[in-house]
Length: 161
Image (tube, rainbow, N blue to C red; front, side, top):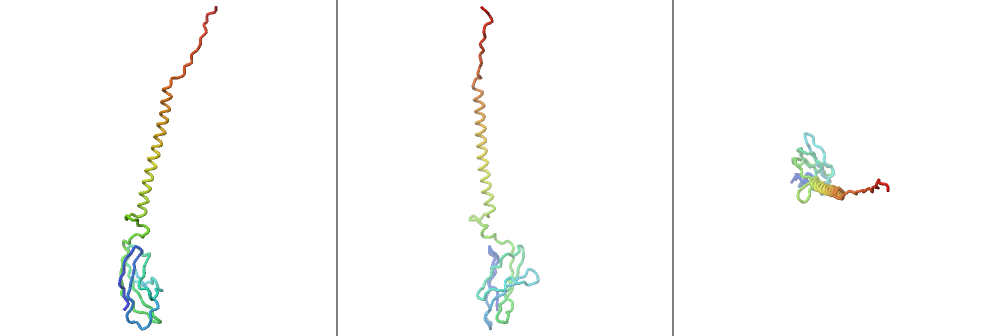
């Protein structure tokens, strides 16, 4: 009898593995994987090569309960469906490209880097502004320290000789 051996959630989806039927009269041509979310069975993949014994179900709807079964197709016969395996798609792991070495996701790392850059720019601009203001103040103080130029008038005496 054809049956599932495992259904494991991974970062990419659900990895389904099965055991081929032991007693079959004709060689297996291919497998058909079916799934259902409610009452009706739908085809997930209808051309799984006979040598394959696993399938990765991707792009599942979050927060849903899936049931899977497999059927072997031989010459002009179809096997009985396998036992049904149920899998919850709740709490999938994030995609591997989202996970960093320390367990932080890329958006979190990007936020941290942006915050550090913003703070560095703020410190740089505030330091430059303080230097500019101090330079202006020194120029102003220097102008006040110099005595104003005094103009002395020469008076001619009004006395006529």
